[in-house]
Picture 1: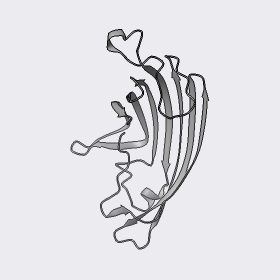
Picture 2: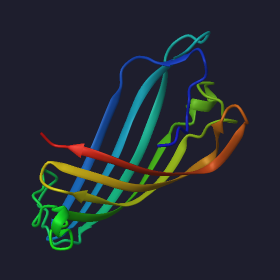
Picture 3: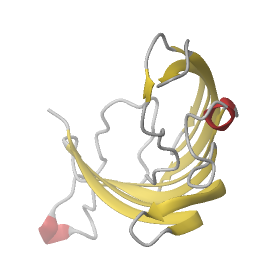
Length: 181
């Protein structure tokens, strides 16, 4: 994902952290809906300033997905495709294909800028992300993710330090593979 906040030199995360979340999951046949709300706080120190600074965080995400190949999901454990992938008979045996969409938001406390932890000209304290993609379960051991992620930032962020390029948006397409063993 895109970097949207970097602490200034002489600033470091240090001290206790508190994090909590409430998670909701609903599964019905080929559909799943998952949502989570997170809140927390961490501590940071800044060179030349006594004491620790509390940085609150708040965020949430919502994901909706559907297995277009007919698999029924009951939880997020290992999935057994109805027709595991076979190259020779791909149209009959494609593995399991799951389409998904996710929206998420993260907000950090204003103290990251008011206390000089980060530069507000280069970074933001809010990020909004939309992910759209599909998961391909070749068999019960191999899963491949195809994901387009669109990020929108509360204010422009520094994308290239060399050129000074800033933007309020960042798009990322990624492919990754997960091996269960």
